Image 1: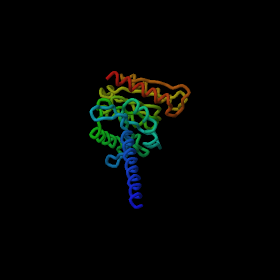
Image 2: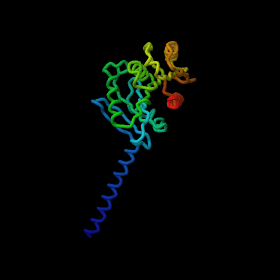
Image 3: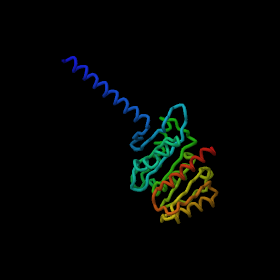
Image 4: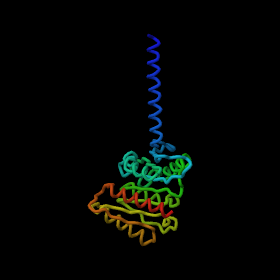
Length: 232
């Protein structure tokens, strides 16, 4: 009797171990991780089939004002996985859009950690942001133009003047906004300033789209970044 119960318990234990290993394997293959760099939280996803013998493009997704890393991560995780990008989404507090707490330096530290720990193609780092995230993204690229190959700036409420910088002009820009978005006028004006200064910029408006990260905007960003990779 005791032997029979012992065998049953061993079977249960074996099944539990198998289940735990299977769950861990699925989690590892998904590549979704919550990480910290000197206290700075960020989410990271490795593309399906990730292996250390290849170098992967890296997409940085910056959340909007009052948002968080999880929201922005969920917006881009499918596109990143489909296109074979490593995805990084940092989480900041309000004021980040103007680097109030040195969030630009914190992102630089995150990128150094990611490049150290994973197989990143350093010439294929992209940044994208919508609304407050777009404020951060364009300021970051203007300040650190050698970090990113391309920047996707959508519907920011406030824009800095483009610097007359050869390095900043070497970055490829996508600027987008919905036609029903109150940020249409300032975003169009920003595009025109980039164009006037000789920046490599693509501009697109989205009919009947308000202030939201619509699926058509994300698809346009995806197509733009594919073309950037083809031209590299």
